[in-house]
Image 1 (spheres, rainbow, N blue to C red):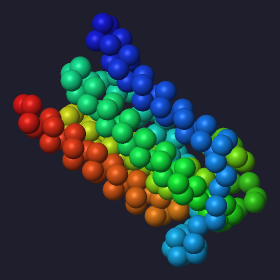
Image 2 (image 1 turned 90 degrees about the vertical axis):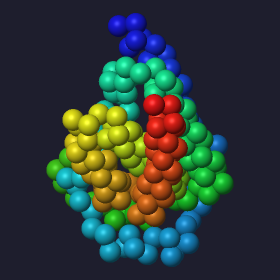
Image 3 (image 1 turned 180 degrees about the vertical axis):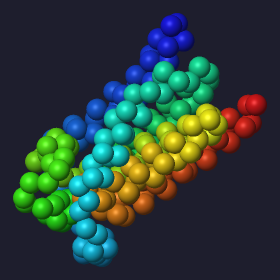
Image 4 (image 1 turned 90 degrees about the horizontal axis):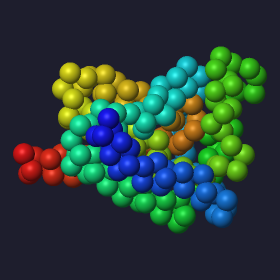
Length: 200
């Protein structure tokens, strides 16, 4: 119980930083992306069922304090997540591209799980797109789960890959948002894994 409370205290800084995602658009207006940026997305069909893996993100960002018993790892995971979040926020401020080009491809008629898609689509929140923070955070955490918990490594991979595809298949992001998010996550994981290896 003591370790859990300590983990929550450590990880809480990331949860606080994560909340800034919703604050940036209040002060920053969106801009239109160049056409080359979303040309691939015009051929990608909306897949309503991918809303389910998209939502698994909200679970995996809550469980790190519950499963890591190593305080050193918890501190390093939190540190990497915080740095990657700041990198994303800088991009959101410098290049706040509008996601309406993909959101406009969502069917107007009712479809299964529409209520869940509506819950994650805010009128004012159209510009925190590049890179996809959803992909940055989930991919890094799933890679960390894969590295540190051998028994669940394939579950972690499946969840991470599913969230990656979900971000652009439900039209919350451009595919280049998701690819850039994956790159940042891999760089963060490479740093974390090497630091763990050096200290073993």
